[in-house]
Image 1 (tube, one colour):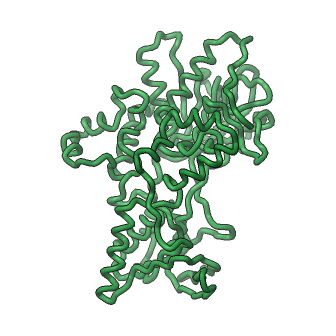
Image 2: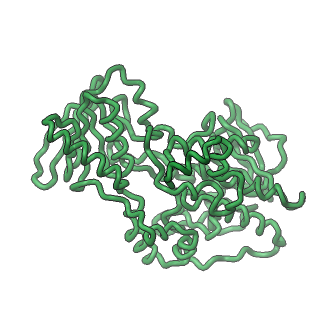
Image 3: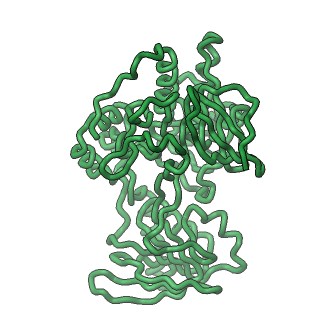
Length: 438
């Protein structure tokens, strides 16, 4: 099937994916265009394969809170006066005073998702939903982007492309999803499909999502046994202390990008406990209190199978047999469960399949990872018509904020400003190269 050329204008920015990252970019473009002379304005369009805006909706567990301050919203770190801020959202919803009285920096995930939907609606004219980007090509001075819309292929043209393709479920080797085997991203989408309450649930993982799933299943199914399986002796608390949080500062991105590969690895190792396989202390204490009280009553529904690992999974029509090994002794036990949930993290989606003939010009490091300039442009071996920018998948070049909300507002502004700066340069000028290490 050939692509039908779009009659739209050539866009300065074409965004692939429309989660929080490209939403922040759409807002940055909108705010720039409000005050810029007509000749300096940037046109933008964003394509999202989902039918409407949504962000990790399978994990919008009632009562679960954000792990980042509301001040690290879509705009405030870039423009504190923006009317797209979380505080502006609260004012518009007539809840600002109530939120202040709540005395918290961390709204619930449900409320924050509502904020994101509120912001996305305000820039809805720039977004095409139910539109899946298939491939990217070079064409003279422009990029051509093939988009599938309603079974038909369309061809859109742009000067710059920004990929924000999000995260996907990460499963252990050999694990497969099924009727009784889920990833935590599926939780709220699948739980209503259960025809009867589960009698035993197994949750695999030691991070925030695993603890939240364990808490949710234990609370939602009061007659079910919930077994949490992980190789540690207990959940580890997240380090959100003030000095450790500096790893998420905008300045830390500069530091990380100019560091040697050895220093980058050290920084990631030092500060993994700010984000990976760690849990909010309040949730740890809540789960421990539940476990203790059940022991007092002699009715243990919450079982913490620590220092353990899942060795085998056999899924059937009416359940799943999970073999768990206690690592210190090697002893194995089989759990007959109604449900197994892998809360084993997410990984950035690989943008490579979308790059088309531009992929051959993209530089990679010794591990095969895409190399990225400080302004989030892909580093290339040849001049391209414009910039291809990544939002996400840049932890190896830009640090821990790559797929997190902490630096999204600043990153969006940096990408917008890079596009503006490069557009204003004479075509004969070569872009400045940041000091980087392969």
